[in-house]
Length: 178
Image 1 (cartoon, helix red, strand yellow):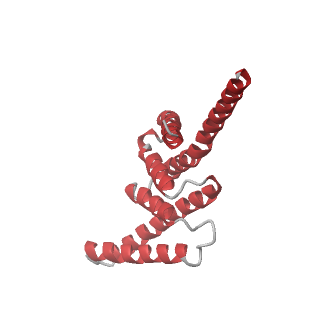
Image 2 (cartoon, one colour):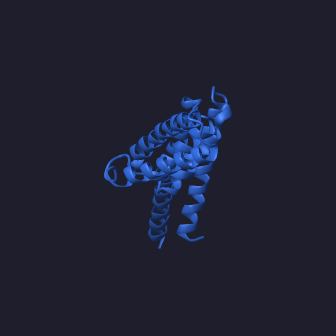
Image 3 (tube, helix red, strand yellow):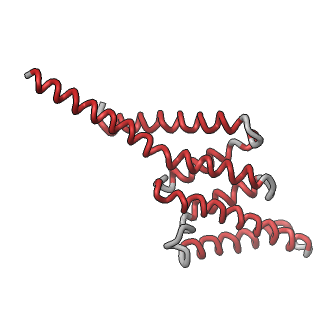
C-alpha cells in the first residue's frame, strides 16, 4: 500500500472515530435531537480546508452566520407584516442578506477571522432550519462539527509519525543484522 493510501485510510478511520465519539456523547445530552448540525459543521469545515490554525475563523464565521440568519428572519417578519407577497419577501431578503454576507466577509473582512464565507452560510442554514430557535443547540452542534474537522489531520499525523518511527526502527534493526 502506498503512503498516500495509508494516510487516507488512517484519516478516514480517525474521522469516523472522532465523529462517532462526539455524536455518541452529544446524543445523550439535551440537544440529542439536533445531531445533524455536527455533520454540517464537519462537512463545511472539511471542505474549507479544516486548518487547525483557522479554528477561530471557522467559529467566528459560524457565529456571524447565526447573527445574519436572525437579521434575515427579522427582515422577513417586517416585510410580511407590511403585506408583501411571500415570494417577494423571500427574494428580497435572500438577495440582501446574500449580497451583504458575501460583500462584507470577502472584501473588508477578508484579512480577519471573519473571512470564511462557507461557514457563515453554514451558520445561516442551520439557524434557518430551526426558525431562529434552539440557538444554543445550533451553535453547539456546529461547533462540535468544526472541532472534529480541525482535529482530524493533527490526530492522523500522530499515527503517521508513530508509523514512521516504527519503520525507521525496523529499518535500523534490519541494517544492524546485516
